[in-house]
Image (tube, rainbow, N blue to C red; front, side):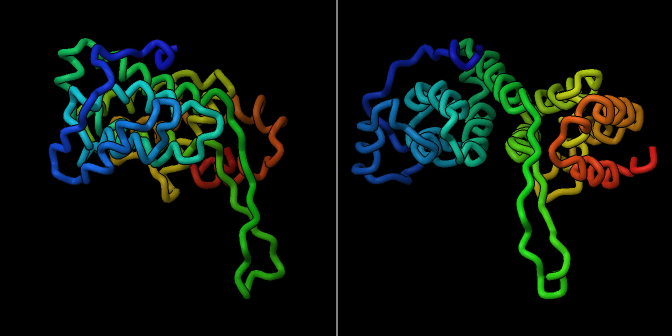
Length: 249
């Protein structure tokens, strides 16, 4: 419940200073006039930045709790695009957040996002348009709901560097809890994503975890016993094990 309880010691700003001279007065006024319950991804990106925020830290930090709450809304389809503003904002304003006594609270909110995204494991299958040469073969594309968000968040934590340990903490939790079927499934999916366009960061502590043969084998055993029998698309797991070099384990 970190996100529901997260508060900042700053009121809603009455002005936005545009420290990087990137906004018009009209746009700044429109941002301020937008009620909290109508703020969306574009608003939060403009308010938090992280590169060209509309306000100073004291002016913009008020909106950080709302950005986290927005990520948990069921109707949100653009959460992926808000990851960089949130992670970057926390990283760039690490010292200020710490001085306000809310840095750990903000990091706990990131932890809650990870927990929310990994609370279930759902494989989705989409038909892939075949090329002229493949018309006789039906091709499908498989992905796991929320996997892109998870992988991208760990990558941004590492890229902004100040909280890279949080990304490692998340992956380590999956690796060390492979007796939990959902976490075992997520560990294999996350490990397999190193071969996908959205790949984990090239960060040695994480790279070692997702290529650890013992962790992978333990997770595969649990998934084979508890996840695959209930899976609508068991062929997904066949592909995962092939990619991880475990097809004949």
